[in-house]
Amino acid sequence: MTCDGVRDRLDRHVAGTLDPAESGALAEHVAGCAACQADLEAARFLVAPTAGLRREIVPAADLWPGIAPRLGAGPRRLSLPVWWLVAAAVFLVAVSSALTVAVVRRPRPAAAVDFASTEARYQQAALAVAGLYEQARDSLAPDTRLVLERNLAVIERALGEAREALRSDPANRTIEAMVVAAYRRKIDFLERAAALDRES
Amino acid sequence: MRAWTWGLAGLIGAVPLGAQTKQSKAFAVAPDVAVRIHNLVGLVRVTGWDRDSIVVAAMIPRGGGSFFGGGSGRFAKMGIEGQDPSLTGPGSELDVKVPRGARVWIKSASARVELTNLGGEVEATSITGSIELDGAPRVTTLESIDGDVTISGAATVVRIRTGAGAVTITGARGDVAVTTVQGPVTVDSDQLLAGRITSVSGRVTVHSGVPPDGILEVETHDGDVLLVLPAAIDARFDLSTVKGAIHAAAAAPGDRSARFTLGKKAGAGRGAGITVRTFSGGIRIDSNPKGG
Image (cartoon, rainbow over all chains, first blue to last red; front, side, top):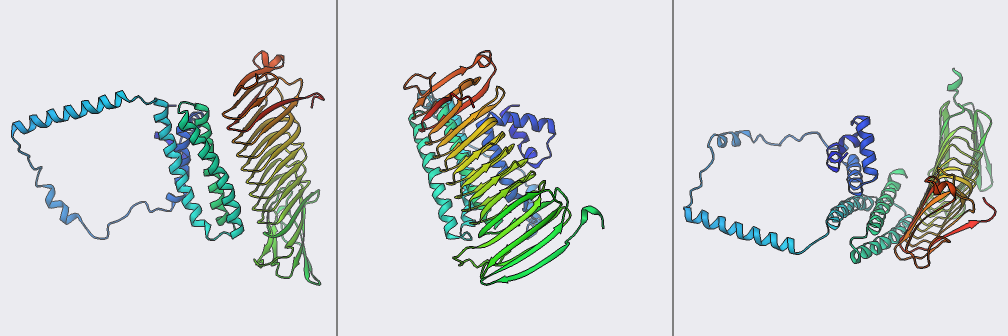
């Protein structure tokens, strides 16, 4: 299964409505793909917060009477002089060519670009779980908060060191894997920390 | 009443003992009863026995809360509620005997948890309390943020997570997965079928055999890793570190990664898969001349 195939099926997989054979193929792909693992974790994270949302929201006021008359009016025609359209076309070609040259002359490894998007997804997931912990934080005993945050500081330090090493050596896949592992630890620990409030 | 739906059979009584109260309860249950036990401060001691009944004794100091408990054939729940959060002395003690095959779930905050002779599924969580297990449950899941976790016995499926708590596993066989933040991990076993150990800064020491179809994976950030393996092991090794050092007979000094095989089976493409990854932790592979 490809990454696109995983993305198409992710929600049904998390909801448990995906065909078991497809679920198996998806799990197999995810096990070896850091980007899809990040997507899966983000999707799993969304299950609980979205479960309580209403299926539809009815507008407070009836807006249809205001919209209906405008639909029959038809599109407005824009009329411009020919010389203006030619100038705009030349300008667009010049700008897009300049941008293409700039991008091509500044090579960036494809792997680094891919990892940047993977890391962005992990950062998003970590931020969301950190928000849950913040909500739970006040109801935890001060000693418990201290213990949790001491451990979080250790995880954060390790993540910082791994990210710093990756900046110096952006093509190093081993360090990439360590950065991903550090994000996973952070997300996992924050989830546990947030759950302490629900369990107690 | 059907045999498996035996209910509460007897309340033995509540006896004041000076500054603390002792309460006891006993009731008949199914051999695979699911038991939930809740005691935040003090001690929870759970012992498996060869009877289809639960006997619980609670010792509750003044301010230590009140005991609740009961259940029917396949489900029982008990614990201490209303504990005074400012209580500074010892907390309440719960001593529970359950059928050996019971599925036991325990929730603690700082209470020490002691588990003995259980053969079913065991799950215990704590924040700062230590957890000790002696026996071989079918499935063991133990979590403590700051408390130490100790397992002795031939447990088969083990899942442990701690923060700063130290993890010590002796005698476990089968599938062992441990995750810590700062806590050191020590595993001493004859044979691990599958071991997965991760830590941020905890030192990891494994002293075990791994069968030819087994795996052992260790990953740390800056925790040192020491594997002491039988001299006659058949294994494929994949060791790598970003800033640490590798000490293994088959690795050259200064190498940051090393891949090699030991034993005839591994040379022929079989053998255990042993993988170690660290960021700056050292990796050392030693052989145990005694073989185990």
